Structures are given as C-alpha cells and as structure tokens.
Image (cartoon, rainbow, N blue to C red):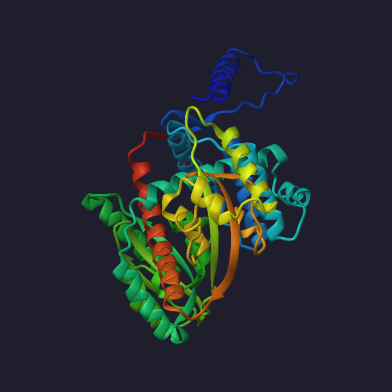
Length: 437
C-alpha cells in the first residue's frame, strides 16, 4: 500500500479518536480530515482523490457542453473509474511497467502539435480543468500505463483471421459507397456472471424502468443515471463515424434499419441488457490508407553491448552513409541484425505504418523522403531508418484489407476491453465505505 496513503489513513484514525474525547467549543480548531472511501486490493482510495475526480469530470462535461447528471451519479461513476484505474496500475506495477519523463514530454508535445498550440498552452488549458502541471504529468503517465496494460491484456484475447479480413475488405471495396456511418450512444443494465433469479428479476425491473423513462426523457439523462457502462457519465456516447462493423453483431440489423433518433433494444448479451440510441447516420467516408516504403538497420543489445554502444555505433553508420563512404543498403547487409530485411539492404515493401512498433512509426513519420533518422530505440532494439517514399492508397484491395483489419480490431477491442475490465473487477478484492445510493 502506498506509504503516503497509509500515513493519511493513520492520521485520519488518530484525529477521529482524539475528536471523540475532545469537547467541542466555539474556539475549537476545525480539521479537514481525509478518509478512505474504498479499497481496491492493496490500495486505498481517499475522499480527496474522489473529490478531485468528480471536479475534473464536471469540468470535462462542461467543456463538452454535456448536461450534468446528479452529484451522486457523478460520484458513483467517478469512484468506479478510480477503482478500475487502481487495479490496472497495480497490475502494471507487478509487471514492472514504468513510464519515464521522456515519453510524457513527447505525449504533451504531440498533443500540442495536433492542436496547433505550444506545450505551455496545453498545460494552461488543462489548468482550467483543475490540473497542476505536476498533476497533468501524473495523469498522462497513468493514462499511458493504463492504455498499455489494457492493450497488452486485451490484444491477446482478440483473434482475427485472414479470412475475416479478406471478406470484409472485399465487401468494403464493393459496397462502401452505399454503407453508412453512425453516431451512437448506449445504456447498459449489468447482470452478474451466473446471476441468481433475484438478480435477473432486479435487472428486468430496471430495464422496464429505463424503457418507460426513455418515453419522456432524453437518452443522455437516462444513461447518466441508470447505465452501468463506463461511458454513462458522458450520456452513454459511444462515438461518431461508427460502421456496422463497430456495432455488436446482435444489434447490427436493428441499427441499420432504424431511423435517426430511434432507440433500439433492449438486447441481452454476456454483460447484461443494452439499449442503443441512433443519433445520426450518414454516408460512410473512408479515409485513404497511408503507405510507406522504408529501409532500416537494427542493432540488438546484450550484457556486453549496451544501449550507449548501440546508439554510438548507429551514429557512426549514419555519418558514413551521409558522407558517402557507404550506402545504406551496404551498411544494412553488413551490420543489421534484422536478417529478413538485411539481405535486401534493409528494405521493406510498401507497408501501413500502423503495423510498426509505435517508436518506429513515430521516427519514420517524422522523416522527409530520403532522410535518415537519428538512432532510436523500439521494443526490438536500436534502429536507424530511411524513408524512401510515402503515398496514400485509396483503391487497392491491400488498402481495404488494412481498413478491414482496423475496423475488426476496434470492434473486438472495445468488446473485449469491457469484458476484461469486468473480469478484473470481479476477481479483485474491492470494498466501498460510502453510500452509493
């Protein structure tokens, strides 16, 4: 358990005991005592953390123009997210996952670049949502870790066959001009695994209550109050530009034949009962797929060949290539430890950069044609890479295969992520010490 949290808990107990034997007077000092609101396995969640999460939720809802649910509903959802986050961070700690300042700085810089702002302007923007600079950096570190853990845990549960990809790619290529994109929201009424008859009855009564409320209240308000899904706090919003391939199979037919503004369901799945709101549908627009042609040199480290030696060696190769003492292809054949590409002078065929290691993708996309990167480290080792060419592919079957794989992956990842979080929560020791009603 975190030492600071342990000490705060001790102080809270001591002050509570002292307070019980202290006579209250008009001149008595007032103490703001932190308290434990929940425990998640080996960690405690403090009321100060919950208050901070609630305030940030409100700031986020206000910034998006989303109507506020009741304070109790915000508090309930904020606490549940703090519990899930704590469990995931504990899992990351047990697996030795650490995120350094360099990656946090790079994340802030990318965020600033995409919004056309400076890093200081981004920091100032988040200050309006209640973040100090230190708090923002901690939040980014936690988010990177949580995303990394979820991706690694969930990805292993997702199996997409080549046949699935091929079939969807052909369907997209032939029919995408007639396909629709949807803006959807949902409401989930959870059922425990292997529910008792009493639990089934309780969920059924809640479903009927939601059905009745949806006749007179807007979907967002009902979702905020009654949905058990993590997105309830945002009115159940699932996202825009969703295709039928992002919609659970049990709801595809109902959604595709519904009109804008309709609510379909309830559907029963392994999570419980689901209602889906169709806010808007429009013709699907598929963005062109980015393709790159590149070559690289890979060096791997060992006990006797460390990171600094690998970086220095690659810098030496890079200087020799730039000075014309050796070609990139000659250097790759001679030095690269990626034997599959080394025989071709380090060359790789046209590839969508999303398939690369994130660090490799980032380094490659920051290059101009013909430019050689500085040495960088990926999960495979140390590299230098050269961008030979880049293009946008709109029409080939390979481009549609990439789009198909992305659609299928997103769909399965969303479903499996929810299942995984549910299993993690169910297999953990969680106690809540405040009234959730």
